[in-house]
Image (cartoon, rainbow, N blue to C red; front, side):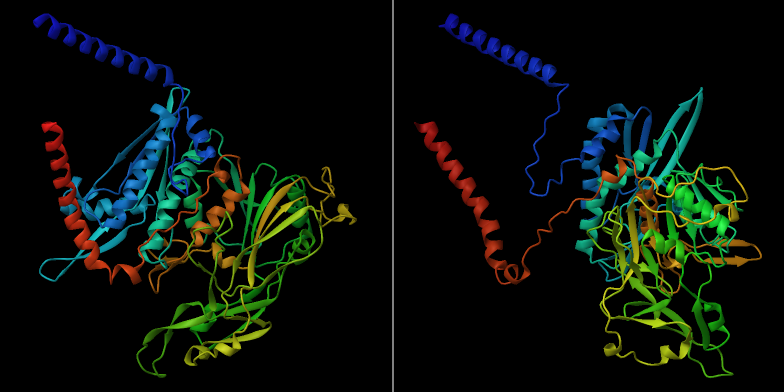
Length: 573
């Protein structure tokens, strides 16, 4: 009997060792091959092919510090789980080149040092969120949370260690969305936000971008916020063309930011030939000039056509910016003094229809998932010409309750004292921005070039190579507010309304426009997927609530009892 038991035990041990050996062998053989099955309908756990390529091409260390940890609300905990799962998926393809760490700032910092730490994180580009929680005594407890991450790229060049850092904010200016929609957009944005940031910061040769000067364009302070956002990914220069047809040749992209003075034909020729040779341009151009500061000294100011002289060139490329002003019932607020003359000023916010909040279409790679875009005295834009080699797509629209006003026109603050008539705003979805992609015809074709180029030697191209442009009929979309004081200059975030403390989507929109122009095959293919919001039907959950409470309470007990009965019967048998 003992020998029989010993033999059975020996065979069991042998089977166990054999099975373990087989599993180890299979695991070793399958190690180089990665196979995962995503059974979700929207493939939310499947990385894009472009994200996989970015991770596989890493040859230096990327460290991700996620500052979304500790005590927080349930929606942010869901976002944290999505971030962790995405980083785990990315690490499968990046291997040891990707490291990540979740940081609980409040727990790791002394209370008296928190304000300095929070200010430091904001200075590094992370946007805080203030959460409110009710205490047991009925009071309110405010908590500062940073739903973002710092991506640090370490590169060794000739024994020298170089570090680049970029902030990633997962809640992208969706202040107008409700909590469910905002969370869904943030979760959709986790993979593209992380993968795109890593792809751009890990580039060995950063692109060069030129901000054109010399024609009354926005200065380095008025474009300071967007330059700060782009600086980790590109070399930024401010360039005066001065008639040099080769002045823009070294640059991957050029930004024309709200010119107020006339361009010379020589400068226009230089920009034209830059485009013909494949250069890419972001145009933020006003068709109408409004001296808004004049409104602070009186009730009226004059709106008139802007004299930058770029209309003919843009028309040749396929767009026309109309000399009109859009007014919209969906607009920002403007502080207006309602106190009678001679009394202490009393400023109250009032809707200012000349500041439309533009709608970004959700089906465009540049505008998808963005908040409303704050504009100031924008114009309508039309696509013209029938060049089949150029593809044109609209980017921004007014709301369904808008109208246009031709110039010259009087802009008066007295309009804020009157309730707007909705019947007068009968135009809908007026376009304000477009993308142009394809092969363009030179605006200087069949013109005497020697008159413009000061006899410089260059190869004129009448028809260009394929390229792309973005044209926005409002220069203020790229302009951030600036406060100039004796003790220094303060730059406000782009798209931030300091009167209402609202953050609009301007910064993300401009960044996406630049990334679109700098398109490389990896980053532009990393796009948010459509996730389906599978929410409970409240019309059914409220009346059926007692039933489901009973089911969830009784069913586990019945299952446990049934399992006990079956187990007892099996033992008796």
